[in-house]
Image (cartoon, rainbow, N blue to C red; front, side):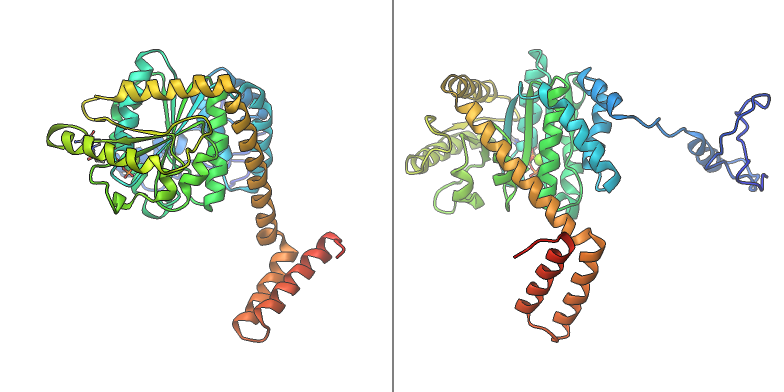
Length: 381
Ligand SMILES: Nc1nc2c(ncn2[C@@H]2O[C@H](COP(=O)(O)OP(=O)(O)OP(=O)(O)O)[C@@H](O)[C@H]2O)c(=O)[nH]1
Ligand SMILES: [Mg+2]
């Protein structure tokens, strides 16, 4: 048992080689029993950490379509560690000229509407036609429940076996703004890696659909039968964002009902402003189970892209989305500064304590926080 941690060398180092390296870890000896658990633990301990990659490695790997490097680049982007921030920004900066060629599709709907099943059916169909399909999930609730990630892994089994598919579950943690920024950057990385269809799944509750709308070309809202007055939880606001409404589960006994629901939605759409100028949002039916209606909804998306490209609207929307992106990044950056800059954070904490104890009024507290920020950055009134 070695005792000098600084000079310890594992047994796999050539004794004859003069090697100066220090080793941060080694397999603990001490317990001699040879059982499976111990062996597994020992094996795990000697598995080398993957080598550290530099910006060049990431960029070259992503552009070459290397899935492992793509995954690791996404991990850098999703990391909340400050040391990864600059590296992530540099990678994005470098791959940006190679982005923009994919069709970006957002898919939303209430939990259980069949989004993942639809993505499985559509994605598998497209892969078999020779497309490269990336699936991303934006689900700010998953950091709390963890449910969506587990669910999607089992539900996209077939698609995950397709060599041309790349599936990335939701980034965990962070504010919705942060999660969305990461998803946008993940989308760009996937594009640079040669994926020509990007499908972004998000649960249509809360705010996430608005943010996903701001990063895709086409927005699909998946609904279930039984529309009518209550729209079974689908908010009018979500319908207003849609480029198509898809009534899913139009199979078996449910098929007739689905057709009626489609007609109901057509009625509703009639009174709404279209989400995209020059495009009429319509309602369709499909069964993600049987695949009926899936090729047709893809045709609708392709028609849309052709038209929007021809009219210049696709470009215009993407420019607008870039602006949104910059604003989100700036918001994120300054919020981060406010919470993590040591001087500001210390002042803020003490001011907040005074609010809690009733020593100062909330409005006064704001003034003091603003003053601290001004002083810190030398800003004048
Ligand atoms: N009959 C029928 N069932 C379907 C169809 N599509 C999905 N389902 C079932 O509906 C349930 C929910 O499907 P998912 O694809 O997981 O739904 P989701 O919208 O991704 O759900 P969340 O990710 O939890 O929001 C599953 O049990 C599916 O098997 C369909 O076309 N027909
Ligand atoms: Mg799902």
